[in-house]
Length: 267
Image (cartoon, rainbow, N blue to C red):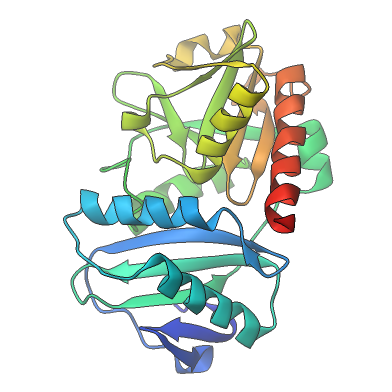
C-alpha cells in the first residue's frame, strides 16, 4: 500500500512520480514526520537532530547533512506546489535508501481545541521508545482500540502502571499548578514536547519529569496531548474519567505555542 500522496516524492535524492512508487525493501525503518506550513518545514532543526539521534540509537550511519535534507524537502514542496501538510522521511537501515513524501494528515478541528478530545488507556509499550521506528503490528493493534472506542488517542501504560506517552503523541498532566510529563528515557522525545517544556519555562511554569500511575488520573487538574499534527490539544476524558479541558495552564501554553509557530514562520 502506497502511503505517499500528491504527484511527486523523493527517492534517494531523485524526484519521481508517486505513480511510479518503488516498494520498500525489507529492513528496519527509521522515520520522521514534519509539518509543512506556508511551504516551510516547522521546527526543522529539532526534527533533524531527533532523526540523527534515532540513527545513533540503532547503530546506523548515514552522512546526509542538515542542508542536503532541507534541500530535498524544499524540492518536494515546490514540485508538488503544496505549502501545507505533513511530510514523512524514511530511512531503511538495511538498504541505506531513503524516501521523502507527503502523507495524509488529520489536524484537530477548532471544536476539538475548544472542547478537548476523548482518549483511552492502552496497556502496552514500544520496544525502543526513544527512537522513531516503524512498527506496523503495534500501530495496528492500538489503532483498532482507538477506532473501537471512538477516541482521538490512546495513552500508553507500561508494565509498572505508569503513563508513558500517546500512541502517536506525548502526554502532559497538570497537578497543583505543576506540569508533569514522563521521564525522557521512557518516551519518544517529541519535538513539540521539547517546545512545550521550553515555553513553560519562559512562562515561569514549573515542569517536572516523573512517573505517574494511571490509577491517579482522577487526581489531575488537566491533561493534554502534544505532537506534530495536534500541536497542543486538551484532553476532555480518559476512558470514563472527565477532565477540565479549559485548565488555565493548558490555555496559556496553547497560545504560547501558536505564537512560537508564527514567530518561526516569520523569521
